[in-house]
Image 1 (cartoon, helix red, strand yellow):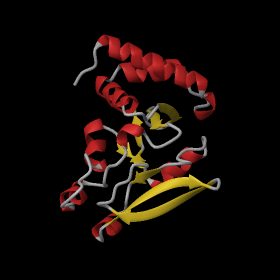
Image 2 (cartoon, rainbow, N blue to C red):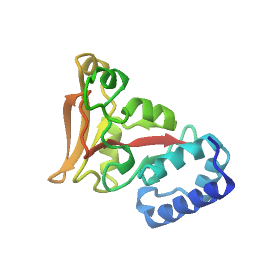
Image 3 (cartoon, one colour):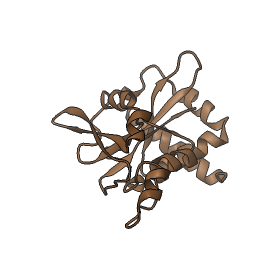
Length: 183
């Protein structure tokens, strides 16, 4: 799905306002750099639109010195509202006989064209603010844990980031996921 000109302009305006409001998240990065990279890749702009439309409030959190890529991440205070109540992956979804969730994290991440945050990326995000004080977010799970039926999620409580495990087939109204996008 391609964005219309109006959708693209609206998204860019929203992202620019968020960028200007949260300068501490992206020191030494100029908006002109960001806009140039975004507008040169329609597929990345579509991914940012998906992040925004599902409540992620994407913002720039860094710059890759080697590649020149701008790094966006979901910066909503709580786990994105449009991405909650998902189990971890297709295998977990297929294993549920009753009360299946609407979807799963890994298929949704792929469809959106983003990456699921790793535990390390989640911890780095928490250095930029307080996120998931009332919700939690699935994070990338090592294959050895997933093989045994589990998956990892994180949250922030008592000013500390906690990592937990759950069955990959589980889902909760207060658990979603955050993504990262390199543009």
